[in-house]
Length: 216
Length: 180
Image 1 (cartoon, rainbow over the protein chains, first blue to last red):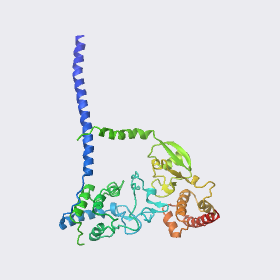
Image 2: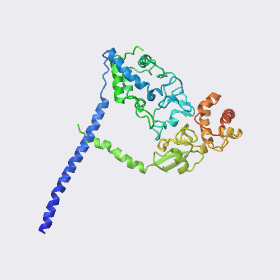
Image 3: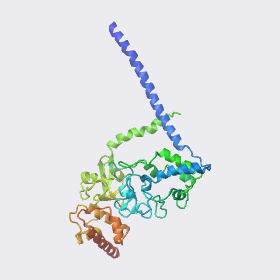
Image 4: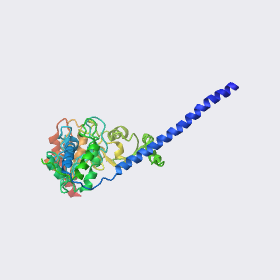
């Protein structure tokens, strides 16, 4: 009887301790979950200042970084000089030769969304996905292919050539769904030459320092 | 700051997985309603062929490269091998079996008339693509046909007969329209 009581006491203490530790740990996990969520929300909602502080050297330097991303296959393939999108890391003409069409979404039985789904299709080199997959429309072709850094910089800040985007919309465009999908290209495709965060920083720096175009 | 209500915001994430397992998917295929017990990620082609049993639509490449699996989703010529069945939920799906009541769609009539198929495997997809072209462009030129049909591959090489049949189908469609 005495032995039984001693045994019960021996197990009761660690059991209580484990319960208390378990409750504390689960509280910490829940709290960090909520805290992290809030922090991410706050970061994404952080307003980017629209003020411009002109600095041609910083601006041109930032644009040179931006240019490497815009001319990478992930961006340029949907900004071709012709009416057929490009494909692959070597930017060859898209197989099956789908056409731009008036709205940039293809023609007849060859519309982008016929193959490109809302998300990437699993498998190597299968159609990448986005809910809004398209080329720029026929009346605003926004060509990247073949543009020099100077030509592209000037085009990007001209509302008549950039899809009627003002300064604010240009800044917001860094987080556009199709822009972001460049960093989620599907299996077998190279990523742009820098992270999205680095690109966004360079993009905003270029705009906020006066959006200067390089000399060439 | 920690907000305890956020836990409940995330609750749907935990629920989502279990919801997916037993989800019944409502489909409308060829104007007939179906309730399908399938994974929402299952390709529409598998549902059409293996669950519903409509085998006119063919499996070709499985990666949206050949066009053998084309069906209409709300009238658009989607490739059912890469289209998740969840995309088709509550939408209108039409397969080759439902394109017309008596195999009398102008494209079907013209295909018969011109003896287009050789082995025939790709032709349900070819006809479904041609039907979209004829709806959107009743008088297609050779260039229009080439643009519209470039995504449908025929290993027997019946491309010239396909082009001829589409021109004939356009004529039939015009006559039908005039007689109505």
